[in-house]
Image (cartoon, rainbow, N blue to C red; front, top):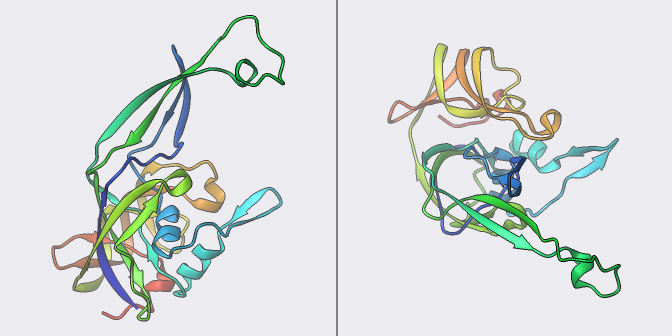
Amino acid sequence: MKILELTLETHSYIFFSTIDRGSLIGSHTITGLFLHNYPLIYSINNVINDYMFYINQEKYSLVDKALNGEAVYVLPPKLINVKTRTFFYNVSDEPYIFKEKVQPHINAPSSGKITYIGPQSVYRTYAVVPENINLPNVIRLGKKREGVTKVEQKEIGIKIKSGKAEVRYPFNIKDCIDTRIINMQILLSPRNVVEEGEIAIGKIDDDYLVDDEGNIFIIPKKLMKKVKI
């Protein structure tokens, strides 16, 4: 397996319901600046959706394959230059539009706003790629895969080091469960923490990787053993 540096540039709006909260004009759904790596893993591997439900929990089988080196594993991306835009909406409720439903006396519209990640936003991350797999140049991210994102890949030199290090590239705590983490800062906490894992940066005392530019990052230990350095 090899490690590639990926630069992601959005060419359209990306929407995830990271945060839902009320406001004076109605609901406000916010797309967080930090992205989780599981949507990236599915998009890079060109798999739309294969998780299954068991005991009311989600199971991401493609992620298990990626962690075992059978598919492309992608780290949570680092923000380079991210732009956001908020849209306001004002729509009529269904009973007022569809005649077969009970009509309200007045048209009381539903109002709110949605914050998107805008075009020309740039992220950078790393991918652990099996030798027989070619990465796509364009992927789709967000709900319903509406966000078009360009992918630029670059081969880099990697060194393995060990000891205490400050990791400024995000990592998934669940994926790196075997890494000795001294302290960390949570960047993103998804709705299903148990199955998806939180995204963080922090200080470790364990094996880590350093690229040509001196950037420090970590990958799951199962993949560390399979990477050609």
